[in-house]
Amino acid sequence: MKYYKPTTSGRRGMTSVDYSVLTNKSPEKKLTKKLVRKAGRGYRGQITMRHKGGGHKRKYRLIDFKRCDKMDIPAIVASIEYDPNRSCFVSLLNYKDGEKRYVLTPEGLKIGKEVICQEKASQKIGNRMYLKNILPGTQVYNIEFLSGKGGQMIRSAGSSAQVMSHDSGYTQIKLSSGEIRMVRDNCFASLGQLSNPEHGIVIIGKAGRSRWMGRRPTVRGSAMNACDHPHGGGENRQSIGLRKGPKTPWGKLAYGVKTRKKKKYSNKFIIKPRNKKKKKR
Image (tube, rainbow, N blue to C red; front, side, top):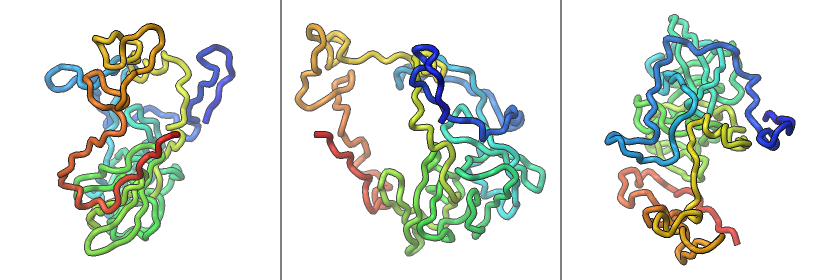
């Protein structure tokens, strides 16, 4: 972590990630494209996600979440770079056939190291292989749901899953939430834990820094009028005054409510649901 001297009110308490491990270079031009901002609006042009908009201009890095089309071709890590569109770092791989691609960077991967995607590769950080060939107890990331579709699970900073066991064409993996689920053992996964584990403990420090990230101001419901929010109304500072707990602006319960569909097709693959958060007394 990087700490700052309290030269101003905004600097006092502010922290950021130490980016000294990154390579000082501009992104690969052929692997970037223009990113069109939606500002929290859906396909109809209406706001579906509040408090989004503005922010610094970004370039989108084309990330290779599959790597299975480069089977048995070794690659050298050319650089480790910052990606403004995701919480973990990205690495630029130089394949022996001359092609360059961006991939997610695991913790401990160094510039100059060799990585490869194979059906059964060596158990080294950054290598990618079938789940059935990964030893139980190993940390993995960028896991596929469907073979050949590309990684869809475990892609945020500092996250990893643990391979538990192999049985009857499935691999049991334990996610960071505590959930244990089955995944087809012919799906690919990468070895290691994703980089930038300190991302979750960064202190923003000031409102302007949030605006740079594209986050707009948020008004508390209890500060509104009763006609604008279920928490609103009352004189001076009041409690929300609801027996069943906090609600959304549209009157639906906000905390402790299950949002997963009861008849979701993938429920049969979940062996143990995620851990429930204990209520504070």
